[in-house]
Length: 497
Image (cartoon, rainbow, N blue to C red):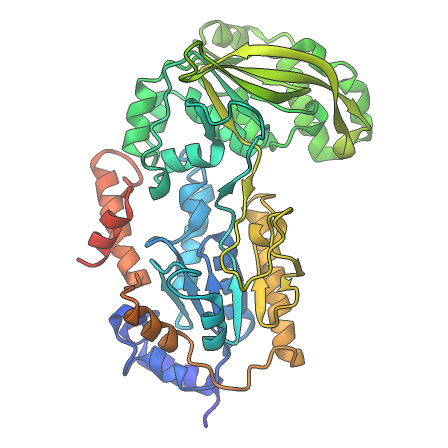
């Protein structure tokens, strides 16, 4: 039998980029280049999840080894995960990674299959039977709960759901947050918390030029929120956002900062011993909170109609209800002190509490991965798949990358590096023989047969391009980068037109 390398070389004479020979399940595997490849003994890898972790893993595998074939399965009909549904609408530059992911998806040795719910439509065991290796990269779609009384009251939302609402995640379409109050409290001080604060306070003229959904834009146009407090259990030296996000808040048009001077006692003296990134971030916080503004900045603040501010050394103990217990009226915060210093500092309760009146509480204390299939080991305490450098414990041939591997930490660049690490582990196992790639595996041919029997019709990448084209045309009509389709039903209708 000819080698995979030679076979691929000859196929390139037939194809230019991603031709009809390699389109995938819906466009006919029989007689296609994809089917021709599948009869060979090329190593076949399946990736579950098409967010940054999935695509970066696929990218590294394809670039590092010339004979590996990668199939990406996604629960939704559309790819890109949190790049589409998590990145703030006013951060279009971050979404440029979609261009790189598109190149990967169109590679002759990569195929995308959306609208396939792994764990329901097909099991992980079935995938392992069809592929030499399976990489789980489906991220963190669960919410971490606060664990305090009143958190299920109307007016309390998770940041994950709130972000999903304004970014067009189908499962958050019906959220309809009540923005009729004057004060909102956000729990957590990471980048997502600042994204939410910025969206709540941004001038509509800025948001109208983004890919924020039309229902969210209409709700924000009617919003009465004038003040946003961003609450953290520790101090200024432990704030979790980046300097870029903080600078955007400081310079947000139509707003002014409002801090508590006492929260910054002793911070200047502690700065000399911290790493440069943390030092620069804290210096900007100090300047914003304590320095007298110049004339131009003073004038800007005087004209600002909206207010934001950090509140440090505070932990939620209860969401307070209105007299009829029909909705949120406030939040009770425990006052903390710190034990230790730097990132290792621990918040300890002082016994004091304070109540803050507010009608909107958004919990941004972290996303959480969920188990996908009983066959996959899962650490429910840490909400990750137990692994060593991406190799799932006690599960040969099974790997993980992204937040499922590490927990919900870091930015896209962090995910890229940890996904490359997983890909390297997988390739090392191929090279060492720890992962046996010598027997031929059917790959997507077998999975397509299973899905067809179960009435599941996948969405290919060319189907996604129909959705993409419609969304961008709709966006052009109203001066936006895109106007997203908001339901799975709409997406499938366009994909199959």
